[in-house]
Image 1 (spheres, helix red, strand yellow):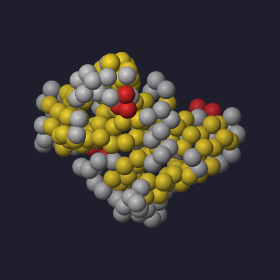
Image 2 (cartoon, rainbow over the protein chains, first blue to last red):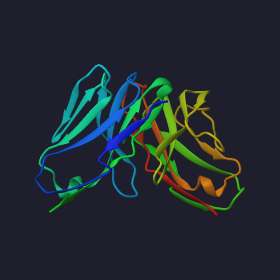
Image 3 (tube, one colour):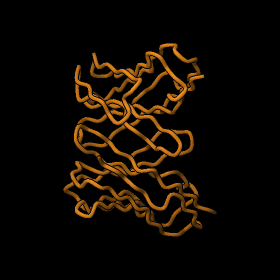
Length: 111
Length: 112
């Protein structure tokens, strides 16, 4: 059974710092990996999707990488801003459209 | 506007009273699924559907039913809700398993 782990569980940084969020998964037989953002009490917003054949995806200040063989992905946020404060979730898509989520990293960016 | 809608957004009910949470998408997506989110347990898949009349169990299907009679709708049915089904529920859709999933705004359910 696929298991997804995110480290750290919580992170507090000053504004302007570059930061890295980590995601690991146990079964490398995935179709893709997706990073989401969730604000308190809100739904999920898709940030980046990396197909299993890809190594990375970029969107603005966000860059996500995927190393399928080692079961790892990282989300790099450049020049963090207070508006980036949220919980970041990674999820892997496997057989039958099963999407398995990690526990999330709660990020706080202080002004 | 392309979106996934859920109704109701908030619901407080009593044990044993049947309820349905509706989910609808206007993107002609084939894949739809339901998740529940609980503190400390994260998001877990309840059921998913790969097309009309095709549904399958996710990680936590006990106590739930679904149906997919039309492509755009995927209702979640709780025949006899219990307090342990108090949770935040999300519906999602995608064109195919290889594409990103779009999530609805969530339904916060409380069963007393």
